[in-house]
Image (cartoon, rainbow, N blue to C red; front, side, top):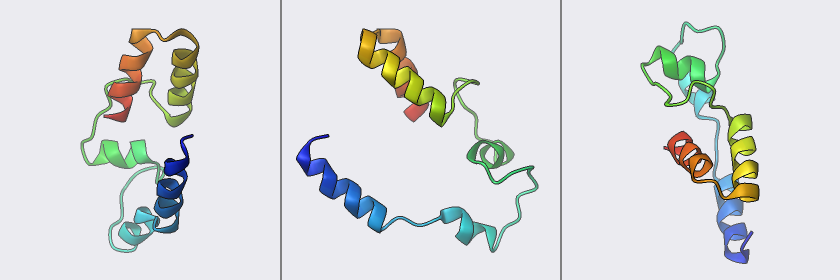
Length: 81
């Protein structure tokens, strides 16, 4: 990781907070879990790739770094969008 990113990451971590804890104190989501996909689906969000997950994105990233395959790059861009 480039040196300048360490400061950015450190500040992001220092100033981060659990948004769900704040929202959950005021809103009850009738979902089976407090997971992003469950709550997102409840409020109408959709995902371009049904198999997308944080873990899957790490796999795609590793495969892309090894192969530089354009299809994997596109999957990552869509996932992050």
